[in-house]
Amino acid sequence: MGLDVWLLLGAVIVIAAIVAVRVAHRSGLPSLLIFLGFGLLLGESGFGLQFDSPELAQQMGLIALAIILAEGGLTTNWSHVKGSIPTALVLATVGVGVSIAAVAVPVHLILGMDWRTALLLGAILASTDAAAVFSVLRRLPLPSRLAGILEAESGFNDAPAVIAVVLLSAATSPSLGVALVEVVFELVVGAAVGLAVAPLGTYALRRIALPVSGLYPIAVLALAFVAYAGAMLLHGSGFLAVYLAALVMGNSRMPHRAASRGFAEGVAWLAQIGLFVMLGMLASPSEIPAAIVPGLVAGLILVAVARPASIVVSALLLRLLRVDRLNWREQAFLSWAGLRGAVPIVLATIPWAATSVNEGTARFVFNEVFVIVVVYTLVQGPTLPFVAKVLGLTTPSEARDLEVESAPLEELNADLLQVRVPPTSKLHGVEIFELRLPSDAQVTLIVRDGRTFVPAESTRIRVDDQLLVVTTAACRTMVERRMRAISRRGKLAGWYGEKGT
Image (cartoon, rainbow, N blue to C red; front, side, top):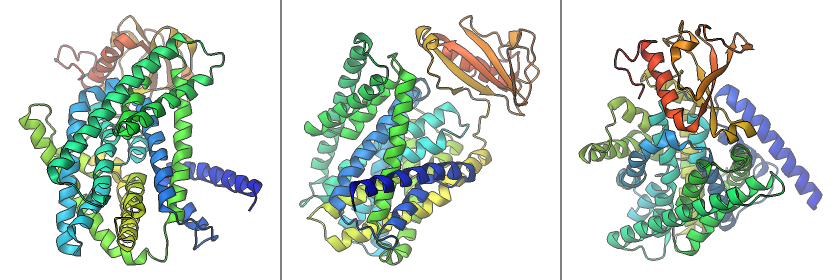
């Protein structure tokens, strides 16, 4: 086929995928499954387009994951995740190790896999998927602490999982001690590179006046890849470097920050579409039936044993270290919310591309992982809102960011927040002046019954109202806590000792 035909085909796939995102959003079906379906339709059992290069799939997949992690870091609110970082780091390190072992042992005993393959499968499945977590959880009204743990964990745990898969796919696997030293070294180097590139890049962007505003988003994404490639050249973790660099830049006051986030989000969606379609084309439908039963068994072990075990062990360690206390409801939700997506499928291409792993074994592992991702994403993703509600973890009145590209907001160093008033909120009946927000914060607009108006000091807040609050960055935390406190205890929240934390 000529270049024009390929361009037309690619454009049609992207447009169809964008329509599919809308359908998936309304139906609750994870969009990644639709993208994988497009790939299967285009592949050998559909339109017959041949793609059988695990090496190319691995290289393109890792680049796509780096883009997705960069977008995740840029759009993560540091004020929401900073208190969750220690917990997320434990889940992303100790939790990953526990998950690998908790998958490998039952798989070895039940499915009869040799130890190396069982450990390899455990390592491939150990990482939660950043794209799946960001796309699903950011639509859920979860407490900021719990959402922060899940977001930060999904950003951090790719790095240890990738290192473990690479080590287990090598011709000679190192001893446990050597492997741990190598993991620590790569993580430290990756963190150092990411934390070095981001401040320097942000400083340069603030000092250099670019002639066109559209260049700033491109520069931000390029800086993220400077961190990724730099860490890889120094034998560090590129994934950790790109995530940390993007996290720092996304939470720094730099020109056209909202536009940079929007650009990164668009590029990340394009990367997701291309990644899942490519992985769907790589899969061979004729080989998948043989992997269904083993895949379902391994997936059940992952969901019912390994993920809960990693959460429980991490929670016990956090309690012993007096770092954090996760109650049983939070542990239950964290166990169920360990979404898998593109990451395990991409990681499964690493042993397939390695000459040291038997090709038949590697293809079978890939097919197993494909089955696990499809089935358990279909089971877990749509049920997360129900699980959160049953566990009593939903917080509909939690303030959310609204991204607005506005020069006045940037000049004022201000943020725009959206607060919805749910039926159970004690914000109902409170007058605007009774909110007693800091002087640098203001309720600028109320959306009620499909209409908008500017509130007066005496305007009473009603159930189902949406409040738009402009606040400076310095008093944002105070505003969020005040709104949370009144939502819980009413306008006399202070008298009851409610701080909104």
